[in-house]
Every structure is written in C-alpha cells, then in structure tokens.
Length: 75
Image 1 (cartoon, rainbow, N blue to C red):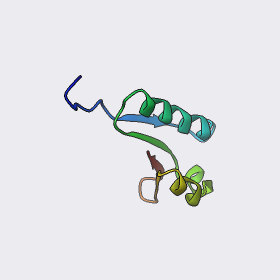
Image 2: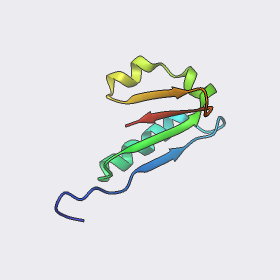
Image 3: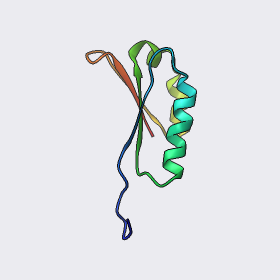
Image 4: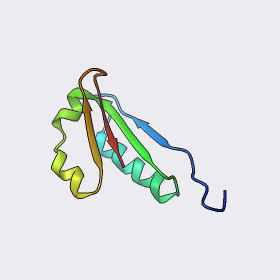
C-alpha cells in the first residue's frame, strides 16, 4: 500500500472484565504498525470511570454516549 494509502481502521472491543489499559496499548501498537486510526470501545460503565483529562493530554478523544451504552476512545 504505497502512495499515501491508508490502512483500515482498527477497532478494539473490551468488555467490563477486560483490561482497558491493555486495550489502549493494543491501539497504540496498531498505530505504530501504520494503521491510520484506532478506536477502543468499552461499556459506558467502564468509560465513566476513565478520567477524560488523562486522555486529552495524550491527544485521545474520549466519547461517552448514553443511548448506545458504550464508550469510545479514538486515537
């Protein structure tokens, strides 16, 4: 894939019993491997426990949505 072509989006899905920090690390690995974007998806309950300020310092976008009962961290 040359000439500025983007690799597919990586989506990492974590359940409440999964380690969210490991999921963040896996998203970083995907970005380091050349993927253009990565999204970490977890439950709203887990997402509410995450400190938004910590993610803003790392240039992450933390999205919390009630209607879908999930939370996304876009890298």
